[in-house]
Image (cartoon, rainbow, N blue to C red):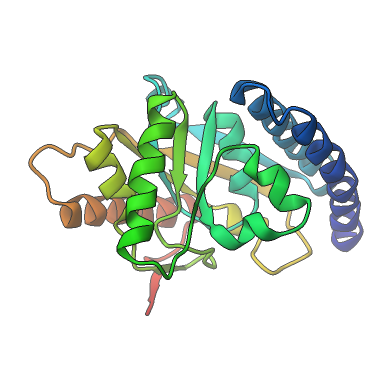
Amino acid sequence: MKLLRSLLFSTGMVITIPVTLFALLLLAFAPFRYRFKVTSTWSRAMLAWLRITCGIRYRVEGLEHVAGGATVVLSKHQSTLETLALQVIFQPITWVIKQELLRVPVFGWGLAMVMPIAIDRKAGKKAMAQIVDQGTDRLQKGISVVVFPEGTRTAPGTHRRYRQGGAILAKESGYRILPIAHNAGQCWARREFTKQPGEVVFRIGAPIDMADKSIEEITAEVEQWIESAVAEISDLPPAELIK
């Protein structure tokens, strides 16, 4: 039954993605807020469809921290689910993504419509400069920027060493950091088609105080807060570090 429910959800997702991409392309020259409205409405619909078909609900803690304008969002990355939920929790929002995603036919065109910060992860300092320059531009336009500091999705109970890009962006731009912990991977695991019913908790931490702290100290504080909160939410022991 879980397999059938997951198939039903995926069918709905596959059907609606082309419609959403077409709407984004039609709005290519419209202000960003209209294009974001399309993607956030689709995300909200997919979260509702996920609840109906697979029995996955989500709850947000610390929503009071969202008020206050654009922010650098440093989030745990376990699943596709958080990419949907964050577009509902933070409005408007965009992402730091791999440059090659923009080269995917049709999908990449639609993705470009939401003003992502597309980087070549092999470019080193050049990639970091792109994050700072483009990220600051988005923040100044009132658009929050999501950075997944681990760089890729991880399984529940594991984590990768946090990269410093998000902390550098916040420090250079002067915008605050909000850390996000969640347990989405327990219901919608990476590389798993079958989804498990349950409640996903998104915990938003208080803004990280960056005064008189180095980039290394800020990154370490974000990592410690997120991983501790994830373990608490998931009722798991401290995450195993993936080298």
